[in-house]
Amino acid sequence: MLAQTPSELNFERCQIAHEAVARDAECAVLFRPENPDEPNGKQIELFVARIPSVAATPARDAFTVIQGGPGASSIDMAIGMHKILEPILSKRDVLIVDQRGTGRSNPLRCAESQSDTLYEDFDPEKFKEELSTCLSDLSHSDLRYYTTSVAVQDLDAVREAAGYDQLTVYGVSYGTRVAQHYLRRFPQRTRAVILDGVAHIGLNLAGGEVARRSQDAFTNLSQRCHQEPSCKSAFGDITASFEALVASLKEKPVTVTLPHPKTGKLINQQLTEFHLYGVVRMLPYSTEGIAMLPLVLHQANEGYYTPLAALVINVEGSMQNTFATGMHNSVICAEDHPFITTSDLQSSRGTYIGDRMQEVIDLSCKAWPRGEMDADFREPFDSDKPVLILSGETDPITPPENGDVAAKMFGHAQHVVVPAHGHGVIGRGCVPGLVRDFVAKGNFEEFNPNCAARERAVPFFITSTGPKP
Image (cartoon, rainbow, N blue to C red; front, side, top):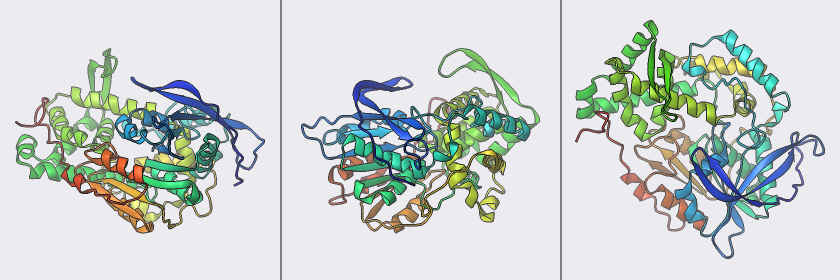
């Protein structure tokens, strides 16, 4: 793909906001060719936000964050990272761009979202119709050019247009894929990298990986409850509780009337086994979610469905409001789906999710325009740049072994595993301080991550008021 000559960025004071949180910043738009090989062709807008350093003379590199998904907004994530960003701003600017197809950068959103396919009785024909509508909604964009290979070119164009010599790059989840590929393509423009919840090079984000990891996470949760006397005494066998609830909801779905968790308006929420699957999949992303799940399952089995219904609303709402479905499909269908192996397909067997997610991906990618990757995109590479790798011990989607794989690839890496925590640990325990020190120095000189070992799990909730006294 051809390199582009970036235009200048004209920053103006602005407020960036997400949900109920806002902060002052400087905003600008960078125009980029949708097709990198046609620099004079159709242009799309990349929305860029900069939070200026309080230093009189800021460092020549900027700190940037890359959100996961794929399909979520990096700027929205940064708005909620006050505890992480404030120490960094003492010496350097924070520069964030919403990746093309997400957030405020030509978002590829569909009127009919396919993000809730795990939470309802899946109808392939209905899904095909919604997919066709989605493609029609996005006909204004060439969906082949919303891949990681193009996104890293955008990121470096933003860096150059903003006038920085280098970037210190933080990526979480899918964002770690972007961060690693940026390091590969632009090593001289990369000062240091932080990978949080690693999608290591070659990892397939499609196939049965999600189903198997989700099953393993629930199995581990059940075993932990069985080993803790208060949880075992209160709830017994969590796996049996889950299976009983699945059978009950399969036989007779339940409708719950409850106040919407955000608006307070009374709504009716249906509960099926598929809604249950969604909650069981997503709660283990955090240690707080793990602490709540046995109680929620127990309450539902006892006929009290309101907590489960509230969680369904929150999980579904978060998924629908967070992800740009079109960008997600453009990435997965170019970078993952073509490389699914027989082993990938088999790994979903015996899981509560089964092959449902694989069926959704297969149908999506059969219809979706497929972009190209850089030729070396899935190949391992080495780098002498400092790479700080963060993993949560109980991460249900990018477990610590992913971080181990990445650490072996880089010659100057340290891997910090945070006990008892799940997906994305940059804000947990002493990790903000570790990140502050690493970013300040740009190396591992006097870097001591031992404080992370002090983290402990949130105790299981035995009642709605919390753990047993």
